[in-house]
Amino acid sequence: MSPPAGEAVLARRAAVRFGIQAAGVAALLVVVLTGVAVVVLVGAQKAQVTDQLDGAIARADDVDDPPAGMWLITRDPAGRTDATSGLPGAVADTAALDAAAAGGDPPAVERNVDDVQYEIATERRADGTTVQAVLDLTANHSGRNRLLTTMLATGLAGLLLAGAAGTWLGYRALRPLSASLALQRRFVADAGHELRTPLTLLGTRAQLLRRRLYRDPGADATVLGEVEGIVADSGRLAAILEDLLLAADPLADRPREPVDLAALAAEVVAAAEADADGHEIVLRVDAPAPVVVVGSAAALRRALTALADNAVRHARATVTVAVRAPGVLEVHDDGEGVDPALAPRLFARFATGGRPSDPGRRRYGLGLALVAEIAAAHGGRVELVPGGAGARFRLTLPAGAPRNL
Image (cartoon, rainbow, N blue to C red):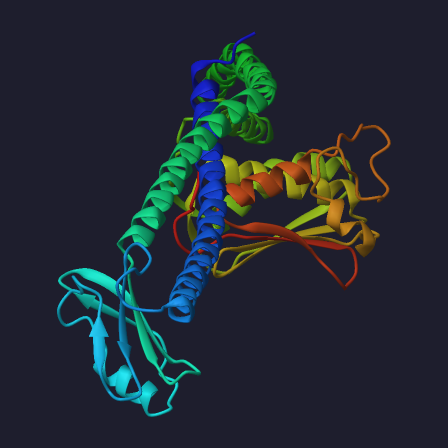
């Protein structure tokens, strides 16, 4: 089964990134190896040139037959100087000849004359003759440049091959994962689509019932309030369903809008009161002032609802939902609390906190994991606050706009 277009696009993008990373690693290796090779090559050439000059000086009987690419200059003890025919002008190092003839040991030097580089070595031999050897480095540099050019071309070809191979291997490795993610997203999309129609009908019927009750002068105010709650809950369910459908599309952007956390907390607590009453739990809201963040109202409502539901199921008598600036939500219950050792895996899927739960309701360990995912999508985090009685979960959201919704 081939993944849908959205999954295929993401897989291709990931494969390209993998290929670029592979090419980057290969480039780093090529640069390091090339640098080492250049250092070794230059050192070997330098040693070879030194051996050539020293050998020519040691074997020189006269200046008429120097090695290929080399010229000789000699000065006998009487001060007479002789040079190989064809010696380029201004190449001879007269100062080095004088220093060596006087008993000094001048170092070898490089000299550039008419865009040609020469290596010059001067030495006074035991017989009193001072010999200077001049080597044209053109042949050495040409060989080195050819080798460097070959290495560069080979390295570039290797980079292209590494990038292409990395992209191909990355795409092959990601295809099973992409297909698995596509199957999961398809299930969410299909389930959401199937739920949309009955949810719409439920909302419509609740609105019709509310309309009839308003027209009835003898309608019970309590019943009317419950119907208002059903209408509000159906609207929230529809928003949650739309958020799930957006989450099923990997290329879709969730809406970014100002969300008042204080108002959101009041809505979630109002919606959870019926369940809390069934457990004989008192829900409280501590939100003294509006706290506005930017994000998806539906997603944040899902996160806070999951935290409140978790607290109601584990509280003894009271659950408090507190809003603090900037962008901090806390849900605190007065239950038995959570073992701090279990905190690292609380927000993993299918993990439980090791607390007594409602025996009539099966737990799947998904609520806190979804809260963590929603918090991460908003650039925030959720954590278990250690210490104190009961369990305290803190959802922290950034003051600015979310990075990735």
